[in-house]
Image (tube, rainbow, N blue to C red; front, side, top):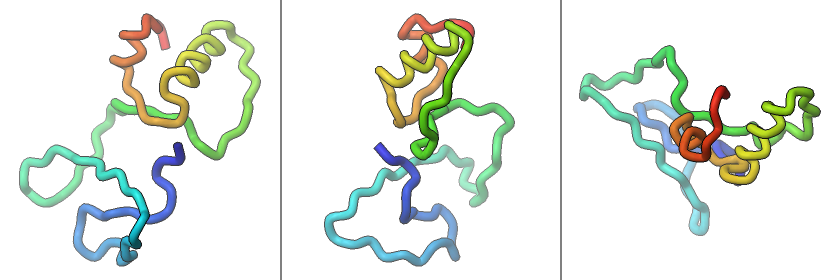
Length: 93
């Protein structure tokens, strides 16, 4: 899957003015809000995903290879969180 590719649906006024075309597919990401009308970046990252455009990169550490194999097998280029790695019995990532 190629996520964050091409057109987007902005969450604020004055954003991208691209028109949706028939047959296109969009994923709408929701964000929690207090209703004050602005987005605040948090310091902690809770979701991760592989970069679609990055090719093979050799890894030296067996643990790193195992983790990447688990990510490839279960998520590929889709987003995932640490909790899902825990459920797959991946520790110390």
